[in-house]
Length: 204
Image 1 (cartoon, helix red, strand yellow):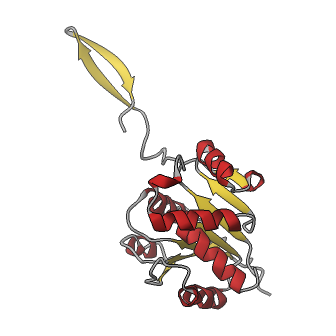
Image 2 (image 1 turned 90 degrees about the vertical axis):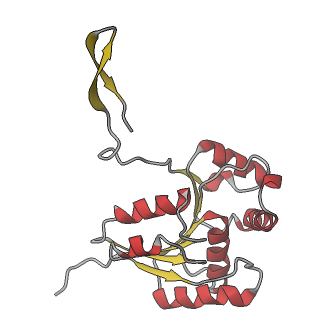
Image 3 (image 1 turned 120 degrees about the vertical axis):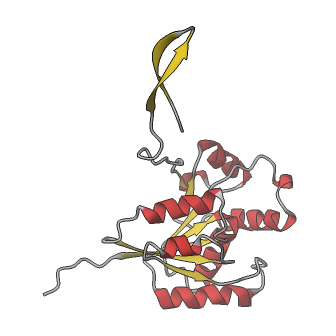
């Protein structure tokens, strides 16, 4: 009898995999995921250079090469078909377009999968955003009751989005983390006024 527990499959839907803050945070998360318990897969709407680095950890990456005009329903069908094939336990959206695409695809599948959103930026003034992104943010506000939780990397971001109409009761804060093995205090000696004085300085 096989007593091996079934792995939890998490489908990460992200706008793209270029080298940016959210994309690198996803990569770091994946690089430290316990693959004995979780089976992450990454779905990038537009591809990107981090795909190879993610695959080097044994994690599948699907690039849909989609135009980000998500209002064309046939574009979302690519994601709908892939989610139906993958049968994830959880769908995790990343960034505005990734969140919206994940939501529209999940709606097309009858809200079959538990859904999380991930927002990793502040929203001081929507007028500072590109015109197309403004529409996605506004549509996100209309659909923002659908995910189980909305993850933010700061309280400021959560407050700004709540003021814009994203439900505060869905908020979960997951601050940006740092690899303390790579970034740690290093003792060095600094000479001052001809005398050697030892200082513990932070070298990052």
